[in-house]
Amino acid sequence: MRATAKAQPNIALIKYWGKRDVDKNLPAVSSLSVTLDTLWTKMTVEFSDTRKSDDLIVNRASNQVLLPRVSACLDHIAGVDRRRASIVSEGNFPIAAGLASSASAFAALVVAASKASGACHDNLALARIAGAASGSAARSLFGGFVELAAGETCIDVATIADASDWPLSVIVAITEEGAKPISSGEAMNRSAETSPFYTSWLEQQAGDLAAARAAVLARDFAALAAVSEHNCLKMHSVMWGSRPPVIYWNSATLSCMEAVRRLQTDGHAVFFTIDAGPQLKAICLPGEAAEVRATLEACAGVIRTMESGLGAGAILLDSK
Ligand code: DP6
Image (tube, rainbow, N blue to C red; front, side):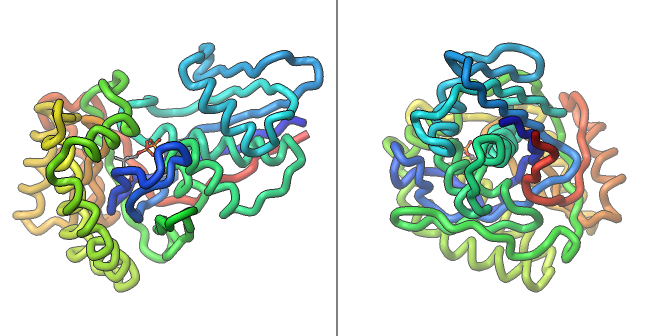
């Protein structure tokens, strides 16, 4: 009847941008991500016979905006005739700011709801349900380096290397704490409809994914850095070419990018990626983390940084 689960956000190195099927939220491209360990969302779901409607609390405040997506996800888990639920979410990082909070939220939600409803989905089934709510959430069911294969009618998701196989550090430079101006879903649809670069983005994704997969399996940091930065900048070029343009960066994002490029010139093993928000994520070898973090903290406009290693997929914490 009641269960709590925890999930970590993931950062895509080869990005999901674009939908094959908007209604089913099927991604148009495959993607590859790393699941983090120190950032988290915990979700408690409690179904009740007496409750008349679902109720969602996010970080101690009632949240009506996310509630319809959360309710639809519970319908998917437990059926439309299910009992209504109280859903309580708590996280340790900003939401809706390009930090993949919806990924960890929906990954934790499906694990908790599946247990609380007495259903028994396996991890792939849960990933598909989470992905229908938010495409990137499917990857947070799995730990380490995660590949999501976008099929015609459904997705496949699996870990291709564990966090312990190739420990990397991720430094997140927070340059803005507020919510993003346009949701990633809406921005993707605008890109598909208006960006002249969208078609070539789709065409090149399989090649980028293959290069990134090979780099992960060979633990080739330089190769992973090159293809990841290229893929990220292509995704943002698709956005910038949309009408009206979708620009998530601010001046601090650019300062951080320049700082990472300077570190690279000085021989440090680090690269950047940026998602649907102005935060920059620097991925580096663990021995580089202290210097990368100090460098990003010194950039104009950086509010604070967060550091994470790679972690596990979503887990059940407790149930009654
Ligand atoms: C830029 O998973 O948030 O972070 O499926 O519409 O909820 P919806 O989109 P979402 O998009 C993530 C976009 C991205 C790239 C990525 O994580 O692969």
